[in-house]
Length: 596
Image 1 (cartoon, rainbow, N blue to C red):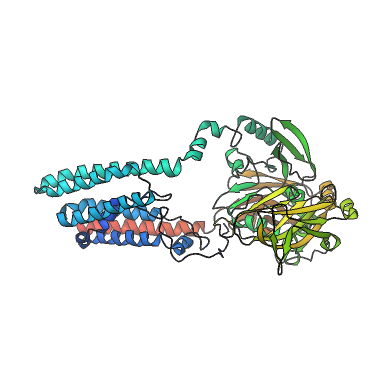
Image 2 (cartoon, rainbow, N blue to C red; image 1 turned 135 degrees about the vertical axis):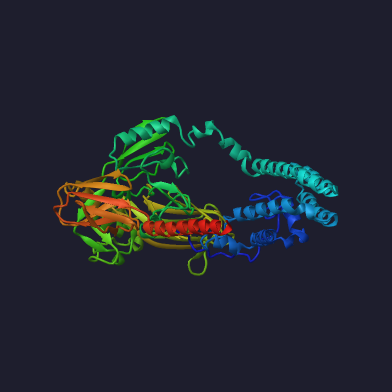
């Protein structure tokens, strides 16, 4: 995946409060007070493994208050609590050794550790004014341990220890129940944790599944559907169709490079580890063979050449009338290093194929129309450089597009750099009623991509209105404005040559080509290291084209391409694993023979 460098201020230490108090009721993890009691049982440190896990537990507890450790476990990006299971593991092992050895403690040491641990809990409850129900059981656990230590008979102590173990298990269950109720099944989650929600329009209804099935039936296997339930980016996964959205921490970064950098596809809801739709960009939809688009009736962000074909309930289905095949062959190769704007990159991919560091310069570039527009500001104070202050929520920047440009182009691509100033907060960039929701500067889910491209059309008066909310300070730079009339896409769609399709096979795809020329076959699936291509049975090396797609060099006689994928270093890891497995088995056998 792609983790954006986190450039906001990170404190050296966490503030100690209810959310960081790991021995009491907080949102992340709750350790039993027995952990604290064990750490204070200094006599038991003479046992090697007790001392080892006491040290590990202490280090991991201290580390939980250091945000830099959170950054390490989040790919050196924003601090995120993604490693606290290690504290649980260390504490669990420590408690197990404590139970094993606690019978050897003196009454004085046990009473001391119990008083300190219990006092800590009850002071926390008083300070936070939050008395959790498991708290009343903690003195019972301590009392059981105390009574066991009063017994002088060694064998009786061992047998009574099982009662101590049961009391600790009951305490852990109580802590778990309270944690689940307070931190997981709070009101919003309770409303969503049921079958009614699963089958509601916010997630996955029978009608949604029926419409998806109909669209799937009327498209070919290699064509895509653009549909997601509100902000459910994983809709294609759980409704089982070939889509263009996902939310995951483990998908290939090439897709995000494509969205963030190459094409600057605007995602309506900013967040890392996701890609979603195309902001109704017709060229991109056609390049990725998006055949159908489904929206709810209140949504209206439709690409230029998608025609409405069905309305049922609150759902509207649109079909792409200028779709392109999933496999195309061309000998026009353009160098990605010589193409500077998203609209030129779209056009170059339509006219030919874009390869990194190879090919000719793409010369049919789009003109920046910004100097042909009139820009006006309302309720905005312009400060030094690109910094502005919005006086109220009615503030706006307006671009007036001359009539001759409106007649020439059907869509416009507006490129803005917007960054929130003081006071920091989430904010919204609204371009002619298209709302793009951006995160505050210190958000751990912020993408760090401040330059965004917006596809839009002027209103009836010929204006493109930029509204920022809420009021306050911003950094704003209007970088460019380009027009699109889709002549190149119409020309490519009208071509009857170089039409190819693929179908899914095990660990890859199989491509059947129609009549074509020598050149590069572009397959609109994401390129991955570990891919292998076979041209009519002959093994060749595929490569990345069009910024994230898969390309293979072919001649005019090529009829079939097979792309197979196996994770990089697959065999290397199998060999290393096998060596260590055999070494472990050999060591165990030798040790067993030596012991005999």
